Length: 273
Image (cartoon, rainbow, N blue to C red):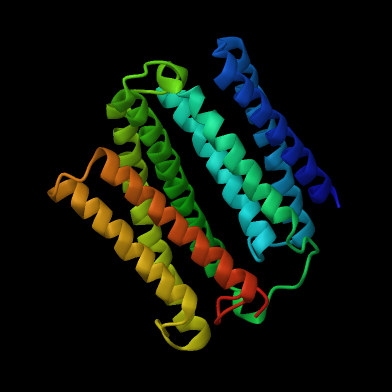
């Protein structure tokens, strides 16, 4: 299928972009950074073709199984990077986005790629609404995670009094903390809306808004974690290092539950149910 070929080309371009970004982190040359950015954007364009052709081949929104959901999630993450780069001139973020995107696509490549009919419970207009909101929220949480990692790296350089290496390539701690916060403020409402639409969908399909099955339970845990983080930032002065660490923990919990539940098809949310 065309979408599978485009998927492999996308993964190859993200791999090349990752190598170029690594070269930039070593050489500190702006031309190398610009090349990495061009390759990553080129990969995003092919990635768009991947999703569009998969949509046409399947005749439905391409988010009905784990392979498709990961592929769309990566597309959103890279797309958000492009928007952030345009807004804040933060091309160095690509050095962190490209390996993360590559890792997720490698993971997706091990998942079943064949087209299968939708499970009866998934045949609903709520599918694209709920899943799109969830993936958008997750993508913003990924950005918060990456900004958190960048913050911790920059902070370590400052505390060690060794001004060199990545210090001159990364933004200031203030900018990274602000971008971490902005990512969270976008991701949290999207997660909230995803849970609300998911509950409405569940009532429509299973006759109950909430059944405490694994996906719902872990979504609620993740919601409380990010709610606590945002509350702490607004009311308790949780900024900088603490906020960065909690952003990292939040994404680990989110992705851990996402993969565990979907790989083992726990509960009604399993893709193969």
